[in-house]
Image (tube, rainbow, N blue to C red):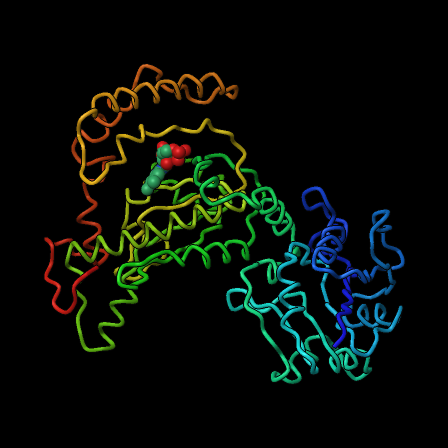
Length: 461
Ligand SMILES: Cc1cc2nc3c(=O)[nH]c(=O)nc-3n(C[C@H](O)[C@H](O)[C@H](O)COP(=O)(O)O)c2cc1C
């Protein structure tokens, strides 16, 4: 097997859904083709053939690639045109790299190349169970592409599963293509945040409450939820679900149920983060038992699980440049919200998450002094008054800076009020935020909330 690898980039499609030439769309500082050529170079591939329509705009000057022409929407005709330019030597490999996968990293390509062996084969990347691109072909599959009886690359891939080598990768761009404007927005958001360590992303968190009208793509949300669900989960119960709402009327009703918060309406997406014991209840019934849902502990476990999942989801979204705000007001009317979302029994919305491309720039809120939070070996209460005074000053300072920065005439924040008096106001009344009916409503949804509860069969973790 020779080391020679040829990359073929089919880029002759009409990109009707995107409405722009996919090869030339901007992704950060580079166009899609420039990115693919640069990634090929980083992976050691120098023979790159880009297939374009004869009428297409010229490729960027100085691009280290051969341009071939094919006036077709068909991928296989594009591949044939590229191979015909200079037939690969019999033992060369071909990487088929559709132009709508421009963000795949060099490490994926290197791994595909490293995974090939001598015989006829197809090496493809798989991320989170989804096969993707680019696809590496070795030997007979290349010749099959040229055979007139073959109608698509997919036919070649599916012909014989024994010769397909799937390589597990963590790069979601192998299956996330740039097909619609939302995909392009997602790709640019991703690039903007690429390379920042998780700690830097956590430290730049701000709740966002104003959004651009651009959509958040379905596949992006699917990927974020797919990723977020890898959070820790008590006894592996996985008691969380997410309901994604885009319908303006439903969002409007949700906003009404959540204290009429207008940013829920303006966010393109609202995700209800649910504590979900419906699956566990089914398990119990399947195995002739009844679920001890009456226990407060069961409720807390499900709620903790859902919260971890929701926080993971927000962080995943922020790591791709999205903005969001958690909505605890989703507990104002749990039953009405459950009905609106058709939640089954034993499921309730712990909080919501608005999601979108943020259009505001709030001043970050600094946190309570670290010494108030971090204790060594045992809890230390001394210094509390000093920490609270610092929290008061930090709150007032944030209010002053925010008021000064607000040129849009947004509601002024009372600069005299510190953190302590706000907390006393919030917590020193009856039920917080008018949630007097919370216990009653949660019971109607199937959660008993009785004292610690007897755990008949297992010890909770
Ligand atoms: C569980 C939870 C519920 C929240 N509910 C709301 C809400 O209903 N409306 C809102 O505007 N912000 C809500 N927030 C956002 C908080 O107000 C915000 O996180 C806090 O003030 C700190 O600001 P920051 O997130 O910008 O750092 C919620 C946050 C959490 C964690």
